Image: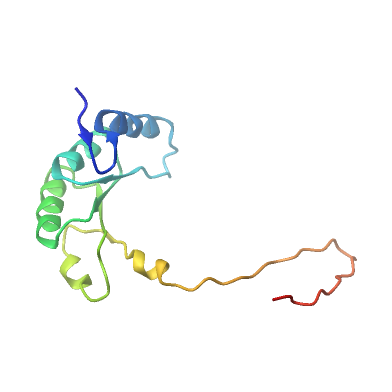
Length: 133
């Protein structure tokens, strides 16, 4: 019987079946990453063929214990820490078993920039348009 992760509403069995399917059709240069919420899910993702396992919203103590256990069994699987990480608490998430750390606040806090690029055929004369606000 597949287990349900209520916070994601995804059946684990189906998700890891998708990992196996992606691994079968992926080019050798493509990486398959799976977001997980527990050590059990991390192990299942690695067993299914994930190249990277994203440990999402783990407390630092849980993160390091889970990453160490996963790397002990699957040393070639990359481990990414994500969720709730800020510049202030970043050092707590650094460790020997963490390969990647994602800080969503870097992109979520960045202001938008409006720009465009217009290409013209060779020999064509560009027409200037006044900038409108």
